Length: 132
Image: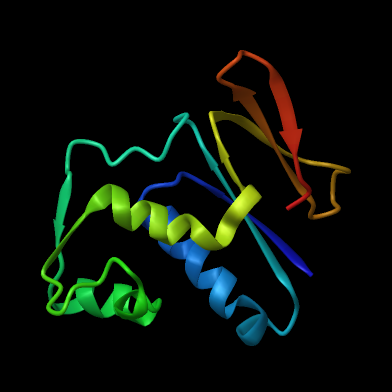
């Protein structure tokens, strides 16, 4: 299989993760395990609390099955960003690691093509995740 690490649980990171979870095996021909790492201790919507959904943005979330979710309205034109982040993260389950600050990436053993990610947790501990 293929192990993929995504650093950042914003809209881009979680959209990529959801798409890979959904389409990865079909398109790559092998099982795909996606893990997302986020510095914040929670999925944070940031300053932008509402998102307008129209055109390509609406098509993008609909392609992930959003229209069938409990968050969809009859005519979706906006959504709370926090709700969308949580919905995008659902397929990850325990593979969403919050409170992990990326501090380095290394290949081990050298020349293997296996990447390991070094993180500092919100408790100040160092940890290594991989291989990816």
